[in-house]
Image (cartoon, rainbow, N blue to C red; front, side, top):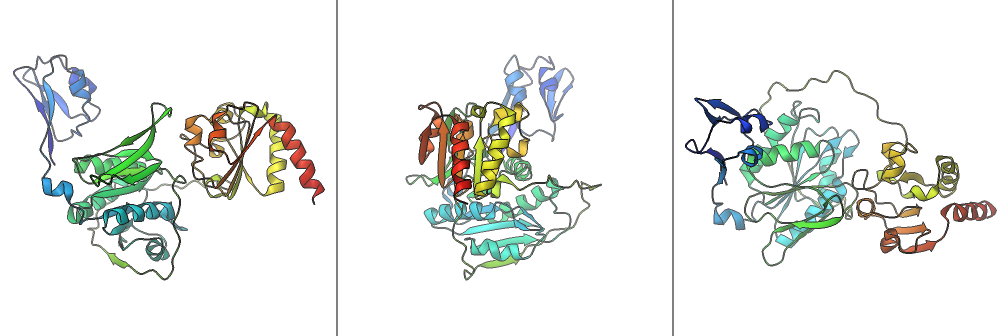
Length: 394
């Protein structure tokens, strides 16, 4: 599928509004008329700002055979670090379910894995094939090189679906690939499925400020692409005996566009994304001084502390503790929610929790709609009683 920006020179009045609105520097005035260059990314801002509607985006009709093609299968982009593959269990497991529904293969693409064991781990979690390159230019710092590498693979193998982790790196790579391949991209998905009738990818994500959940389809362009929020989809079983193809693919070594001058140490403290037990607090705890009570309770049950967005904005806790659509998505075995009302933005981040115990003074609080145990009452009083009983039990 191809697309091109068209300017009707007869209709253009040379006002320059399109030039000023273009974020890519792709437009200029020439002989009193607007012209476009190769920097255009087809964002459409100029079209919306043209007062005489002289700008249009013409898209070629997609080939019918490409729309229905499933031979390329489902792909996942596996981001890695020295410890292994970030988000790999859940992302590969999600890809496995989609591939099974489509009756096709699952491929994991890995650029410059820092730890070789990750290649076998991807197979163990469900990948039929792992394609990787060890070229040093393909580092997490140089997104342009990674985008070029991935686009080359996608053009060669023609997958119908490509999934990315919604990490900072994945959120940079995915739109770069989408623009170059002229296809769609749904960001920060919390659910994925296959439509039985059409075989299309159903991509569910929060929308309208997080107040609604929307399911999005990409019926024409290929591949269908989505980024997936870490921690919201369940991870499948790890099978060390599973076998699959692991192959290095060629990539021409080029000069990197990014030079790393220094690396900052990661924030200290355990990550709430990986915690098996979490105590999540909201505005219902009253004041910052009551965090001491929360920390005491969390320590007694071996849990990490997390919070809703208002507490971060109020300065009670740092951003790394925030759970929700604009924070971390978590999937603990146990989540104890104290004084959190449960706006849909917050609920989007705790969907992976296995067991939720919620305490709130409001019996109609939205948090109760997703809770396994619901307690209506004062969160601080209940915390004090729980601490007393835990201490008594030794």
